[in-house]
Length: 437
Image (cartoon, rainbow, N blue to C red; front, side, top):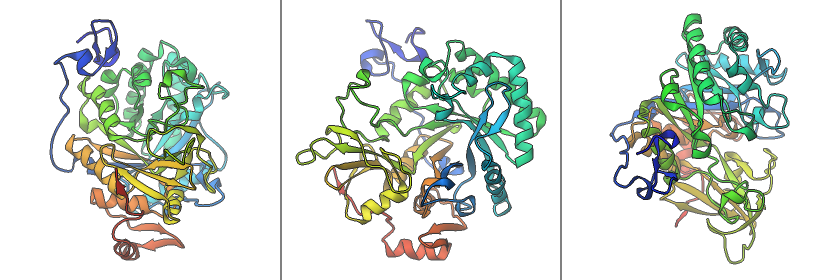
């Protein structure tokens, strides 16, 4: 192995970095292995604060299945780019903060955290484009941030903070080379302040791609935080477009946005750095990535060419993405479903040229089984607000052994007994039985 490559990956004789035998020879890192139910102890659900503004399939905090999750991460709070104090993303969010943390009255074991940041915060057109990078570079600005954060959490009843910086160092995301070291120092200072203020939790999100992950000093970060939330979804999408992104190299072909083989490759990067698996939460998606196929008359499987994103859903209203609930409707209307068991992902084709990849009860179970076999400490979900009927949450419950007190039904909140009856009637599957690939 060589110290020249980030994340302790191997350097080939030609000076390229990688993790396969072509780069590493026989120096392959073994994955952690164990039996049992290690990942069942922690199920984290992100809640989108903007989801209540959708025209349909809204999930108000009161409809979140209490008991299905050990933690809820409210997404998001922002950071003022001038004062560096923590701010709500909008005036309507304050009421949602209170209603979400109030769920702890129904389940005293539930922890509700605030997630700070998110993908959009580092968009080039945002005033917060450089905010994270500027924050971690200034001790004075960190003091302002920490003081406001602890006050914010105390005011609204949050139990911890999740830092979702997407991404340090990456210049196209507002980063600088100094972020690699500064982020560690920032998290150390934050941890110290949180400990002094009370029993607050601290986590960060991690990308699944080596391109972004190489800029995280995960070894030193792991000494400071409680756990990593690894975003093992959005592995592929319409951004894999050779026209606009020549480095994608996939020639505009559809690929599943979540894939267990690629997930395993991502986690190998953590094991190379001796990250404890108990500190890792595996990311699961309550949504699908969609494409419009270029030649549906002859090619409709993964690997076929696409011409653009799939049609926007009636409720999420975003081309290239459908919520779990919207996909349920597609399948119920006769979509052609297949399962790729190697990748542990479902695929559906409908309207001739529409293609989506997603998870359901079966593939959630496969991924959770993988997490347990590799001793992971938990799972996390993006996002509970994409599961308007509570069907995906029920699927997780069956795999984790956790039981929610309520679930969201077609006509509102259904009782647990009703939900069990509905599940038995449908044969334990919320979606159409697939054909195998």
